Picture 1 (cartoon, rainbow, N blue to C red):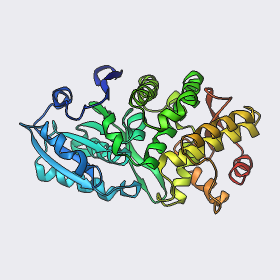
Picture 2 (spheres, helix red, strand yellow):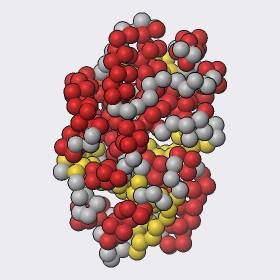
Picture 3 (cartoon, one colour):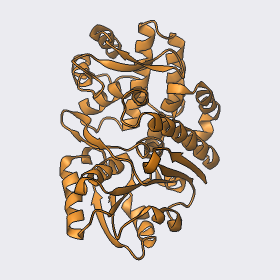
Length: 356
C-alpha cells in the first residue's frame, strides 16, 4: 500500500493506493467526522462494491444515492437529486458523502458536497483508473452544461482518497485504456523519465500487472499532488495539467459526451497539442510521433474523427475556462516533459491542426 499526502495545510489529506482498501474500513472511516454518510454511486459500480462500503459504516446513519452510468449523467438535475437525498436523510453540516465510482460520480458528488450547507466533507473512492490518477485528487468538482464540459463547479477538497486497485479488475478494457491517457499526460507535462518508464512497461501496464499499476498510479498522483499544493485554484502551474484538455473537451462536447470517453478525447487532444507545438516551431514533430505511438500501444485513439467540423470545434474551444478576453490560451510543449502555457495562439493555426 502506498500513501501520499496532498499538502494543503489544515486541509491536507491522504491518498491511499493499494489492494483491499475498500474492506480496510478502520483506515478510511476515521476521516468521517459526523453521524450521517451518503454513499453516491452509479448503477454499474454499486452492485459490485456498495455493500462492501456499507459494511464498513456500522454505527453511522447511512443513505445511498445512485445515478446512471456515463458522462451524460453529470448534470444539475442529478446534483439536485443528491441534495434531495441529503435533505431526506436529515444530513447536518458534519455529514460526509462517499463518492464510489469513476470521475463522473466523483465530480458530481463532490459538487453536491460543496453545495450542501455551503460545504460538507466527502471521501473519494475511485473505481476507474482515470479517476484514481486524475479527478479524485485535487478538489475539482462540477457538472457539464449543454454549452460545454465542466463549465460549472467548485474547488472542494476531499477528506481522503481511497484508491483500491482491485476494483480495476472489473473495469472494461476501453475504460482502462482511457485512464492510461491521464497517466501518460502527467509524464508528458513534466517528467520525461516517467514517460520513458511508461514506454518501457507499456505492454505490462496494458495487461494490468498490479505492481506496475500501483507504481504508475502513485507516480502520477504524487506529481499532481505537488502541483495542487503549489497552485490549488489553478492560477498558474496547475493549468499545465490541462494538456490536451481544451481540444479534448471540445471533442467531447461536439460528440454529446457519447462519441469519446474523457481519456480518449484527452489522448487525441494531446496529439493535437503536440502537432500544434511543432507547427509553431516550439517542438520537433518527432515528439508528437513518439507520443502518438505510445498512446496507440496503450489502446487509445490519436486521430480526429472523420466527420469533425474544425470551425465548430474552435468555437467550443473558445468557451474553455483558460480563455480570457476572447484570447485562446492553450497548454502546449517544447518536447516531452516540457509543457507550458501559451496565450494568444492564432486561430488559423488551431484550425489548421484541427483540419489535419
